[in-house]
Length: 517
Image (cartoon, rainbow, N blue to C red; front, side, top):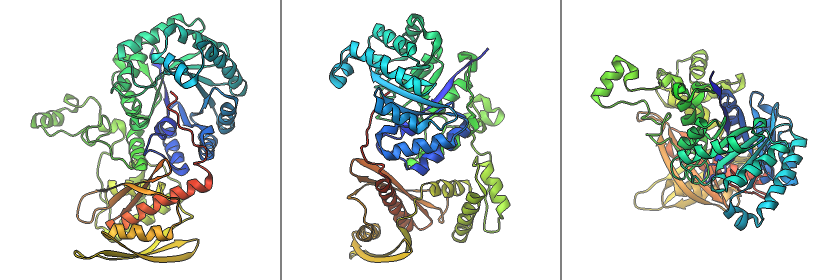
C-alpha cells in the first residue's frame, strides 16, 4: 500500500519573506485559493506576530480556506503563540508551528542559551501551544547542524508535551541526501515516542540539493514535506513543490508513496506566483519552464511524435498545460471567453468573470487576436491591482531625441483629478517624476525596471515589472497594456499604491524576518 505524503506549503511564509517576493493581502488570498485548488495538505499562511498586516492576512486566509489546514509560525514565546492562535483559530483545521534553534552555533551565538535551557523552553512552550490548538508542529531550527543525540531529547520533549508533527529542517541548505536520510532514520529509530507524531522535513537550496534531500528523507520514512511553489524563499530558496510532487507522482514505482495534490493545477499555481512576484520562470526550470516540454532536436521530435513517452516522462496535460492555443477576437462572446478561462484552469465568480470579460473586450479593440497568454495576463494583472489611492486618468508625453522629454500626468484620487508635469531623461523617467510630485508616498527608490512581451506580434501586450524600495522592503508593481509607456505608468502606480496600502494597514510595523526553519 502506498504511503501517504503530506504536502506542507510555505509559499506565503518562507517564500513570501524573501527579498522581492512580498505580496499584499489580496495576492496572498489568491495564492491561498489556488493552493486549496491544488489540494496541498497544509498552507503556512504567514508569521502572525511579525506585523499587523501579516496577522490580518493569516486570519483572512484561515477564515476562508476550508479544504487545507492553515498554519502560522511562532517562536517559542507566549506572545508569538497567542498571536498565531488568534490568527488561525477560525480555520477548519488550525495549526500552530513553533520553533527554536538547536544547533550549537545558533544556541550559543543567536539565542545565548544553554542546551538545557532550550530543552526546557521546548517543553514549556509546546505544552502551552497544545493547550490552545490540537495540532502543533515543532521545528528544531538548524537541525542538520545539531547534535543528533540532543535532537532526540528535544523531539521527545516536544512530543511528550503535545507536538503532533516534528520538523527536521535543513535551515541553511547544508546537508546531503545520504546524510539527511541517515539522520531521519536515526531519529525514527531512537525517539522513544515517535509513534505519536509524524516526521516532517524542510529543505533549503543553498547547495542546490533541496529537492534531492527532501526525496531522500521520504525514502527514509518522513511523511511530510515542506516546500514552496517555484522554490521561492530565503537566499537560494526552498524545495520546489512542483518538482517534489511530480517526482513522487512520476516515480511511484520507486518511492511507493501517494499525495493528494491535483497535479493539473501545478502550472496555474506556478504562473500565478511568478506573475505576482514579477519574475518569469527560467526557460529550463524543471516542470514549469518554457523548455520543459520543448524538443528541438530532430531525433527527439521524431520520437515524441511517434510516441510521447520516448522523451517525455510526464505529459504537459498532467501539470495543467493547456492543450491548445485558441485565438479569440472582438467577435467572440462571453460564453466562448468563459469556456476558455475554465480550460485555462481558472475558477472565477460571476462578478470576476464579468470584470475580466470587459477587460478582454477593451483589449480586442486594441489587438486583432487575443490568445491564452493575453487572457492569463489580464487575470493575473487584475489580482495585483490596489484601489483607493491613485488611478491613472490620462497622460501626454512629449518626446524629443535631442532635448529633455516631458510628461503631463493626470491622476484620480478619491474622485478628484490631480495634474502635474515633469521633465526627464526619457518619457518614462518624466512620467515617474510627475507621479512622484503628486503621489505622497513614503520615501522610495526605483530598484529595477523590466519589460517583456506577453504574446506575439506587433500589437502584443507589454508587461512592465518594477521593484520599488521603501524602507527595508522591496515592493513589486505590475502594469499591462499594448502601450508600453502606459504599462510603465500603471506598474509604478501599482507599486506605490501597495506601499501606501501597507502603511495604512500597519503592515510594516514591527516587521520581523526569520528564516526560522
